[in-house]
Length: 452
Image (cartoon, rainbow, N blue to C red; front, side, top):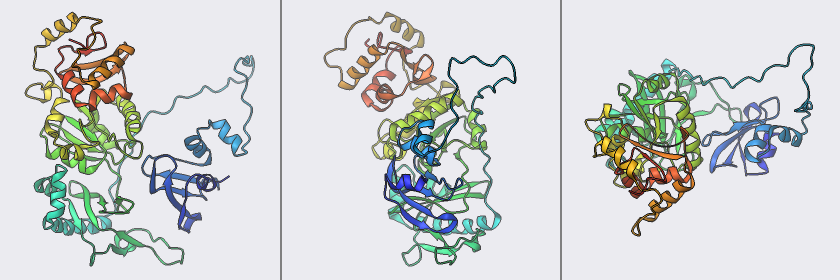
């Protein structure tokens, strides 16, 4: 059974191209959406393939059953009528003669990919589009107000070379792909496809005057974010000379981070499951602190996707802590809700990067003493807020969990490993819990000493 057959049983797909065996679009069986799910039935020797540009699930027909039906590998093969050799019994004795069976190998270590800039002709065309769009933005008061509400003032928009593409006579722009140095693609009728340049906010990524990418945020319709064909998928880094970085999903959020603080740079991944490229990886490895603020409310996976991503980040970077915005799903929403972005970032940084630690205003030695003197077994006072009472109960039920509450680190650990779930949400995203913990005298908070 082909991937197209399997996907068509779960969601409604429509054919969008006939070349190379055809291409179908539709909602993702996992994260929904409208046209974010792509299927190519002729790939993988006729088994087909799929890819969701939001939650990043991808594979062939076997992987489809594993991703969306919850089947194991062997059951998925059986469902598709694929014969596999019998697995030897677990207690079978290895042969005493003959070659030794191959040892199961560990997965290869992570290797960041190297991002290559686009071709010269594409860069020339892109640079002209960026400058034209930027001039339009500086004259568009409505879009400038919208950006300011997300934490990006006119000066920051100019520094990032943001722009506005009004289109031609109010309609999207179309150009010959060949004029941009892109390979020719044919439509169903055999005529060449045009390069689509939709109306909307243009978000370029430029390194040393080299244009790597143009992303366009459309005012309406799907996809909301569109990457101009020919762009590089280089990881956006702002303030690469900084010693601390905030990791976010959206490039607009990265620009807002840089606009509202002078201590940390920003890294925009583009999606919650993306990984840094070679350039970003090298810079982050040298950072004194990484604050992981990937979107919590993203429709492509939400909190669970962000927590899964955080596990990878914690395993690959020693000084990386989960640091979601106190309110809102991302930096832009938090700013709109009145959060001081600069103060939020400063609270997550070690003393080496700040004039004074904002996490605690008390003496550290006194903190240790008071923490040791906390009375175990005392319940919360009657006026304790519900969120704090819930956190207290969860910590009592999970005695191995510790909230690390020191000037150089703020995170939740169990036996040295990152803790997600409800405890994480309360610690990082509930204002009353956050305020209580940051003013708590102990450096490690558990159910035994949370009540002081």
